Length: 302
Image (cartoon, rainbow, N blue to C red; front, side, top):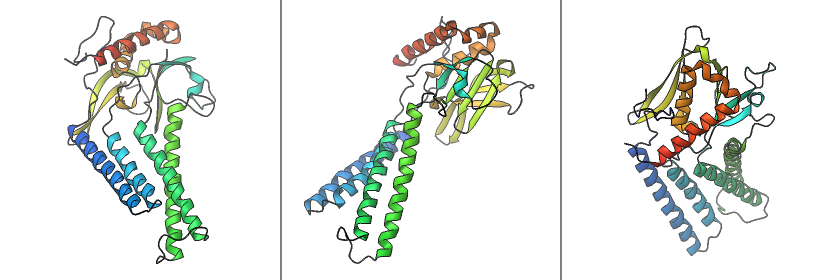
């Protein structure tokens, strides 16, 4: 049982709250504040000397790093809910899925400040690339007359690469945010169906029958001295193929952790209730847990 007990509705408290370390918060606040100050100072200095070209470039460089710093402090609570989907959108296999309909706990959208930072960096680098090309072809005077054409070309290539890479990363984040399961765009997350659980996470694509899940519990993974990742662990029986366990990092899922934890434990322990996952009864139960978990999140932990 979870450390927080069980509510009358059956909702269990996940024993490890998702918290950022104090050190990460302090470093994020310090980095964000310092680079924001540098962005304003550098831009103001260039404007005062009449350099209207370098001012936005300086502001963009430090501004992007400022967003990364403040973004490291964000710990948004999961606000999404289970999505009732046709299982066909979750597979690329030619064989039909085991369940016709499943309930998806989707992956949490990427940090909004990171999306803005990568998008900003891509636009700024693209502008720098165009400005460099104009200098090479002679359409604009060179900023540094002492530098040769070779050095300028290297700088242009580097800026172009930065623009492409940052734009690609931003595009991936935006696509993950808006993907809806249309052709070629499978939703990512954890699905619960009448026959089993499917894991659709970056780098991991696995299916587990309910009969192969021996237990569901909570485990902390230590990655650094002051950093631990809370996970939901699916312990697999000896009859299951592949790994002996599957760990789900709950911070990456956009469903209240208590609700997902409860759902996995409930249906693993109650075979007679799994049939409702293919009908509206399952959706009602999952939505009830999700709504109660959100009410709990608003209240202070005891």
